[in-house]
Amino acid sequence: MLATVFFLSVNSTAQEKQIRDLKVIKEVKDKHGNMMRTVEYYDGNTKITETIIIPPFPSLGDRKKINIDTLNQDSIMVYVDKNQFLVAVLYKRKRIRQYRAVFGPDPKKDKMMEGDRATPEGWFKIVSKKEHSNWQKFILIDYPNAESYAKFNKRKQEGKIPQSARIGSAVGIHGTFKSGVKMIDWGMGWTDGCIAMKPEDIEDFYKFVFPGTRVFVKGIQK
Image (tube, rainbow, N blue to C red):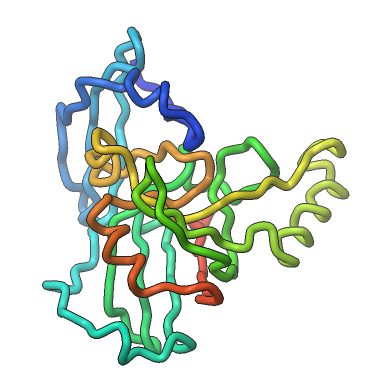
């Protein structure tokens, strides 16, 4: 059975235990270098097979040791590319860190309203960062901001979302539960619209960002 999978809610830990026996049953590269990976797993008692397309991951080589105290915080920026499944840290326009990441279940969708589980696109700023019991770290961005409200109101006027829709909030960058690390490697989106990274990556990323750091989320060209 081929299926589009809607993974666990970022606010729920009960559903984590329902996804089990995750494995790759086939993987081949296409002529563009994309990995066509077919995975199989159980969601509760339901056996699911899904094919995921993962583009080549640009390598920065080994992570060089960087003294964070020597960096000008105003020159740091976060670049999120939903098409490449990555989060990058830029310093003075140079990429100094890069991490695998996943998003909501359908990365092609921009967030339109509360509950759609899509990851918002555009320019944002980091509001706060803190330790988190489930996700190691949680870095909150300022969604919804003025740009978000402008898109939201326009979509209401165009009838793309219900008049009763709410815009949503509490979107951030965070780690993942232990059994979810493979989902990051395999590009399996499961969040409620947040950006999820491996535990060791979110720990490293956390050191480079601060309240006020700019974040750009690039969508997938349709």
